[in-house]
Image (tube, rainbow, N blue to C red; front, side, top):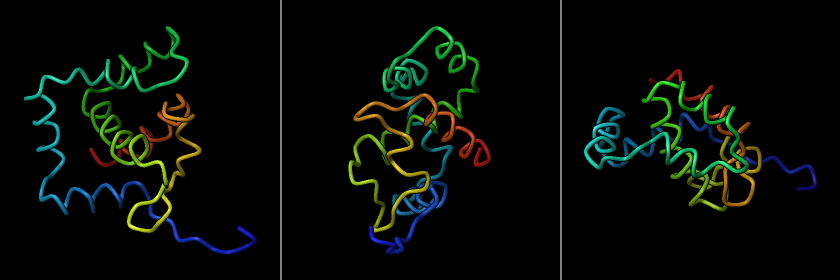
Length: 120
């Protein structure tokens, strides 16, 4: 990177932009997950590397909406997006802080949850 500056976009801003682009709100997203019968707790745990009983307990004790939103953000911005970019901007937090290959680090999930809880 040789001292070059790269522009970043906070994950909260990227999420708002994506939802606005598709004309949906968070409650629409939550309703779709319910309608599809998605077990957000199981699906999030399936995306975390090295799951322990303690991790299962933390996730299971987290409010449903926060788990659902974290799952969506993880899938849309980090798992399927190997570049770590959104519309030419580097995501903040960066992919390498959230992911370990194609699985999420538990610490990365906690970072996302901390950031996303203010949107619900």
